[in-house]
Image (cartoon, rainbow, N blue to C red):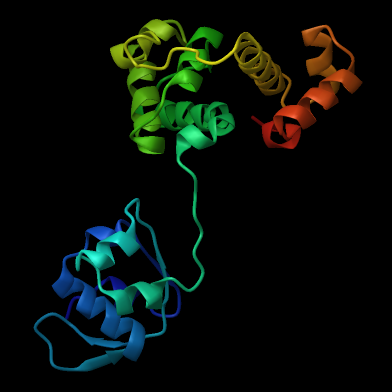
Length: 231
């Protein structure tokens, strides 16, 4: 008589992660729940009616999987009612400082640590890395670095070898001199917005420029200072 996940979620929401990894037989069962809003318990014979909102996530291309007959087309269209596509971490590097602070707090609670911040040199390496493992890889990197830190600060030396140098991670600064200088300027602005919790006036003072010039740079690099409030 043990209740399963869907039965427990009746009247609420259930989140199915990595939906693209479900085997075809399981996809058929999920499809039935979506269509009929009913199921039988494992080993049971009584049909149970449910009303559940289903949210799913995947890092795989389901449309390509449909072509390869690895994912049911009817299930895809049942799930694809309100799709939200999130770019990979390498495409939204401005989120890295915010995520790093979150993962530092998480590691402090999980391991009883007292990491206060991450050094500028370390954050520079994180910003240059290509992150094939996305946010999960970033979380693992920060957790490892937090454990290895001995002074309450995550240093570049606490990061994995693959992030230590641009050569080893194949993330050398490329492009024209103007592009390279623009990347450095953008990162300096982000660093100061983090340290001033999104206060543009204080950040401008630290950078030695006027607030008006800083706002022009914010517009140029599409940086929203509100995102750094409370960081």
